[in-house]
Image 1 (spheres, rainbow, N blue to C red):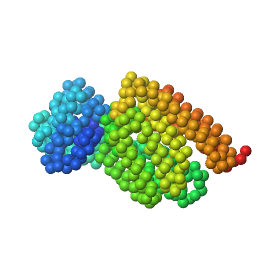
Image 2: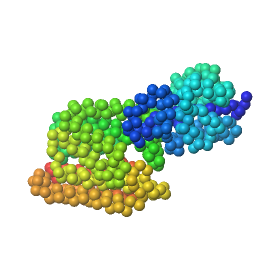
Image 3: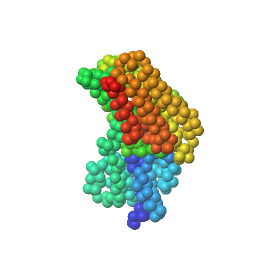
Image 4: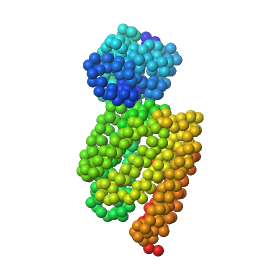
Length: 478
């Protein structure tokens, strides 16, 4: 039989889409109704097919937002154009399979798990042979597909492991095509953990430097442990947040490329890594001090409230971000036993409120450039820029005012040898924050202004100048 006349049967999870639609449906359900997590074990008592039916009926996935294996999809469309029959055969529930088929408009027939057996392995092979016939080519990705490949006339390997590919190639079934899998390298995992965001946890060192206790090795050692603890905890929350925001991230022009949104990394592994990182973070925090552990737990509670609920509310989200940044400074104070001054905490609140508003404005500017009017998953519209813009600039200037009041305070005049040099640092703050806002207005701002500041040469120069002026004001007499 000519290859064009042999039906091509395609798996869904891990093949047509690199993600697992059952896991995504479960996450959708938990996001809508967290209490469903307690009911899931009871649904399993009805078997895999019953469990999938219960999840799909209450959760489901949006086929339009799923990531797809584009090279495979292009190949299937080319084969369809040649007149080849294309069949979707999946262990996913029929409601999900039908929605995917309807969205792609590619399949002549859909075979999926319904009220009967879970359509996987030998059960899938039997269904294909009954509905399609003995002659078919099968496209799959995992060891669970081996029985189907053994009964097929040909195989298409999609992101299969080296071991699975070896078994298929060592058999009697010819391999028609092979598509590479997504890279799961250390670099991809570091992106998922947002290791670059660990720079934010350098804020823990601010109380130590503000007290000019640079050479206190015991405090530095405590801060090193605290830094690693906070970084691991933050990475755990970033992973959970990305999994929680899968659907909205996929609708974002840049966030859709994140490792979990694009399904470069599997959701289940993400949950395991997040759990491990969180356990290590709590263990290290306990080594620093009981007080620091309590601050870390407060941080986790607040960031969880932000991720799950508060970030959906206008202005509440940016206020919470400002608080979370300031909490890092307070955590550093607790870890070292140094009291953070009210000047420092007030300055921090205004600076990070301005940076949080930069983050929101940069997203809205990007949406405006794309011709869209509102964010997805957040209560902001492009029209809100007329309010958010002056609010953010006002917060920046308020931070400078707090710095000016600090410079004029009697304790500052007594502590610094040349306190008037701090006025130059205040001008540096105006330049730096103003630069960030101008870059935002031009649509040149990164999703995260802190990351942008690290990469931007002008920002780095301004920050270094501010630090140098603060040190000169403290130690040098003119």
